[in-house]
Length: 359
Ligand code: DOR
Image 1 (tube, rainbow, N blue to C red):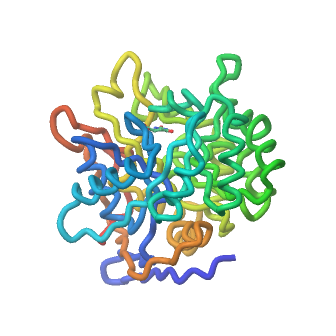
Image 2 (tube, rainbow, N blue to C red; image 1 turned 60 degrees about the vertical axis):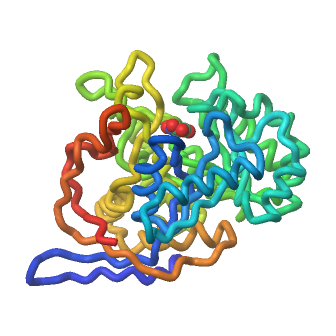
C-alpha cells in the first residue's frame, strides 16, 4: 500500500543498522509559549520539518493576528539555522467568525481549525460548548476545503472518562459528517479500536493521527505500583486491546493513519501535583519511539509512509525533500529535561531506547 523508499542498511561490522527516512512532519504538537517555548520548539524542530501547532494557549489563538504573532515567536525561539515551518491552527469557539477563518486560510496563516469541546482538556474552557453552535463555521470549512482537526471526546460527568472518545464518534462526529459529507477531518490522537474502525470505514476525507505514547502504553501505565502522573494525557490511554488496534493501524500502510505526537510538555511540578496536568512530552525522542514500535511490529519499512508521506498528502502539501537518519544504537533517555521551574519529565524517562536520531 505504501510506496515508501525507506532504506535499512545493515552494517555487519558494527551490527548496527541505520534507517534513512524522508524528513518527517508532526501533524499535532503543543509548542507552548513564554519560557517553555524554546525547549518545546527546539525539540520538535530537531526531528520534524513542519508541525501542526495547537492553538490552546492562554488566551487561545482565535485571530489571524494572534496566529501570525505566535508563529513569529516560535521562529524567534529556534536556534539559528533550524529549518522548520510551524503550521498554525485556529481555535474554534462558539462565537468564532467564519470570515476571520477564511481570511487566515486564504492568507496562508491558518492551515486548519481545531475543535476542542469546551473543557475536554488543557486550556479548552473557551472551546465549543455544542457543535451545533458552529454549524455555519463547518459549512464554511467544507466549502473552502479547510481541514477540521478534532479533539474527539465528549465532556459529561455522566460518561466514564474511558468511554468519552467512543461516545464522541456516535454522538458528535457521525452527525457532523452526515451534514457535511465533504468536510476534511483529522480525528486527532485516537486511542480506541472504535476510532480505528470509524476512520477505516469513513470516506477518504477522514483521517487520524496516532501518538507515539498511545502505541506504547495502556491505562495500566498510570497505576503501575502507584499513581504515575507522567503517563497521564488526554485522551487517556485505554485497555490493551485498544493499543493493539492502534499499533495495527499505524503499521498497516493505510494512508488514513499518520504521525501526530501530541507532545505536550508541562513543568514537572504541575504534573506531580494534587491535580496533575494532562500531557506527555514525547518530542525529544519521538521518532525513536515510533521506530521502536514499528520494529517490534516487523514493519520498519512502513515507517516512512506513516511519518513522512501520508500526512502531507492528506493535507495537500508537498512532501519534504531532505532525509533524516536513525541509528540502531542504545540511547538512554534522561530522567528530566530543562532547568528549575521548567524541568519536564520526558516520555521514556530513565529508559533505554533502541534507536537514536542522528539528524
Ligand atoms: O494530554 C494532552 N495535553 N491532551 C490534550 O489534548 C492537550 C494537551 C495539553 O495541551 O497539555
